[in-house]
Amino acid sequence: MAPLAPRSGDAIFASVERVNAELFTLTYGAIVRQLLTDLEEVEEVNKQLDQMGYNIGIRLVDEFLAKSNVSRCTDFKETAEVIAKVGFKMFLGVTASVSNWDADGTCCSIILEDNPLVDFVELPDTCQGLYYCNVLSGVIRGALEMVSMKTEVTWVRDMLRGDDAFELQVKLLKQVPEEYPYKDDE
Image (cartoon, rainbow, N blue to C red; front, side):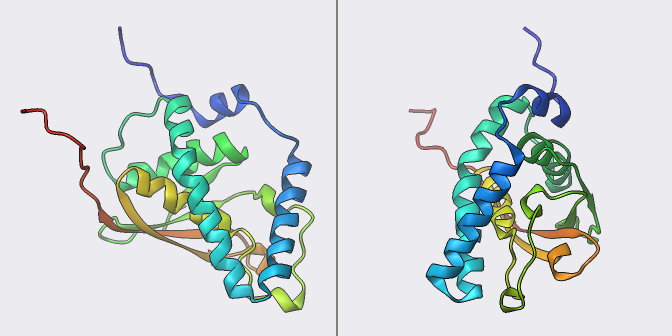
């Protein structure tokens, strides 16, 4: 049997179950608000959102690989393109672009054209240090760690802070060799 061709983000998005976008946005906003109330420090909320995203990412990668039929990416550049074109479309219904590559091909920017998490959101002056969508950086970091890529993901631009786009910088720290739990030669 011939291997299945990878499915585009649009095809996958059209075939998966979705929740109401407003419900999703408002629920996420309620989570962020509760974290701000409970933790009080904006920096602690940023860390918690990143950790929540990381926990989501390490589980989400299984669903992504099962539904997208994407084969193993050959390098970090291809991986970043798949995240931007297929992953973001599949799970958030938005497209992203990859740019600003460094000379080594280990650092790039993922720029979101739209971000459904920020609908209805305005940050008050007391929350100016908040990276409201920090859950996304954690999701990317967690998912990439599950495919043997140790990364650092940070926000470069954020429209909630007055920038002209949402931009995440993804830096590959190291490619982790895969370890198998048993040896075949025994």
